[in-house]
Length: 430
Ligand code: 4AD
Ligand code: MG
Image 1 (spheres, helix red, strand yellow):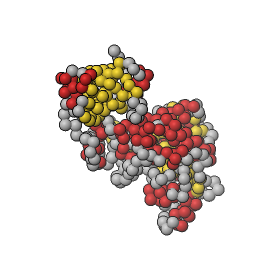
Image 2 (cartoon, helix red, strand yellow):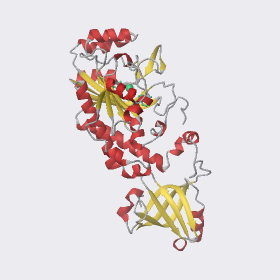
Image 3 (spheres, rainbow, N blue to C red):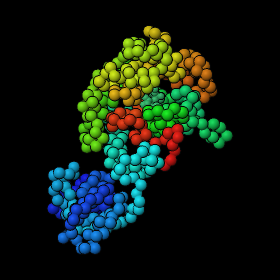
Image 4 (cartoon, protein in one colour):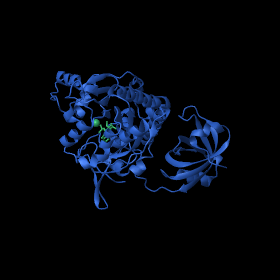
């Protein structure tokens, strides 16, 4: 008999099946043992009744320890009170692999302990719910761009130069040269957009973030679309359609998981276009009104983002930041040369920036001047400058951080739980 996945048990009502999984929890009362079994697809209660099995087996069932792996033969019965709607009436239970002194018990544990045991913590129902939602978000990202005929173009991880400033670069030896771990695939996507039109990359990116905040990882996943013949307004249109799509996909497909996480789903249902768009100047006004005195010209941090997001019930796009607080490649606004045609999308409920992007400088001379102004090595960008020499066009794009998006959608306090194995300043194990 082949094993049946627990999530599919309903298709076998009244029949005998074999399941394989791990013992999550156990209770006993007199002639009954209730074994809580999970196999990754779902959880089921397997009921061992003294009258149904041999005395030895009944006794052995009582001794199965938490997280032992088991094989169970049983009959599928309807059980309306459980989440699955079915339970298993056990005929035979066998331990496959014993589990001795499993460290994560159903009692409360501290975060540090759980992070040290991340390889085991992943088995818990809350962590499973987060990973299911992460998986759905990633599927939605790919579906969205596939449906729109964007071409996936993979960006390299080893890079010769910085994209997002030099302060948080990870440097590594590359034979007899220096290389840096990629902070963003954007510059390569600009080359790809000039070759194929609408493109995107999706992969891990690296930043040596020396601040310990709840929004920063040193290794995180970013999806970066880049579009030829696209301006800042069209870029914002794409960003809001994209974010609406992925959030609504989670709402539609991950009801159980959102419930496990006790997420207020009405807040997510509300994430519908159009999203408010405000200029940096308007954002500064909001801040000043609320008693935050960030001077014009400074970038916003987490506190400012939270204050601004409180004014809105869905993500807000802040556009046209001062040139001086943004990266070298940003397109200067012809109407107001002090500001860049860039955009940040700030998630509601204090989750901070989830998207950064904008229109790119497509003029060779201005771009050269910016590279010099930012003190970047011109030689490293020779290939990038070529894109402005050979048929330069208006183009724009953005990057969405997957972990910040997962944190927001799941309603999590810290990004460390949004990725299977978080990399933080003080954590590289397991
Ligand atoms: O705003 P950022 O730095 O933009 C770029 O890298 C552009 N080159 C993207 C582009 O236009 N193609 O980063 C984009 C997003 C942020 O909004 C945030 O969601 C995420 O990446 N992010 C981080 N997530 C987790 N940990 C960190 N240390 C992050 N840094 C950025
Ligand atoms: Mg940013």
